[in-house]
Length: 324
Image (cartoon, rainbow, N blue to C red; front, side, top):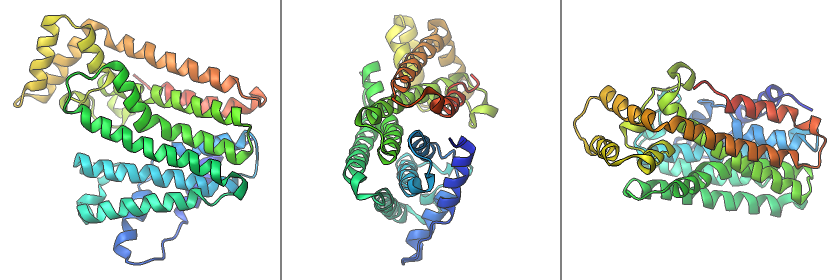
């Protein structure tokens, strides 16, 4: 079994050495730029970890893993454009450098390249891999549209939000695990267990991000605290607060949401105070643990020896228990 660090070294080297020889160069340079920004490479790592549960010839899964990472970065590129985000991983976003039209086209090409890389598998696995990848790609777009729609709605429920983040975030993690399992020759039941594992882990991760945006250490979290509060983002925290708040607390929350002119620190402090009164942090922690424990149940149901899942459990554990 490989260590996660070894798998990351391998896929990072593979992605770095990808070449784009077609023209015009203005279409492909932003791809190299986007991938050069790095990131944790969590999704290709998950694919490789799943594959390694069944096989050791890791290099055979590199192309599919690169396709997963290409698709993920395409979603980030288009997210930045839709959100008008000027920075990504400390660097200017693609649309800020090359303009909206090139950003759209580059994202489109990245999608096509992702399908190309993911399709570079043995014929016996091709149909199952493409079915998994295609379904995931459709669902990610559905999740993004729900997220956009939620901005204009004031009736978003906890269940609505969970379904949105399942589609927008979790299914890509789930598909990464499942594709790795398929390529490794796993049984259909094992592949489905790993899909379900990734889905639940993805939900826990997103809820953890919601929590860290309010209660995290900026040095550990990697960005300023309170960003979701300032932009009135309908996170689990805000939705749960409106669900549990009394009339006075709802009135205060709504006043801050409706305010156009405000001091950022004052708004963050006021909304966080309501969260504290309602113990929203604990609500979120319990929900995270619920999904995490359910995910571990799926992992423990695999037909492989439990010793083989140790590295995967370690990776997930480190991601789950970030500082709050």
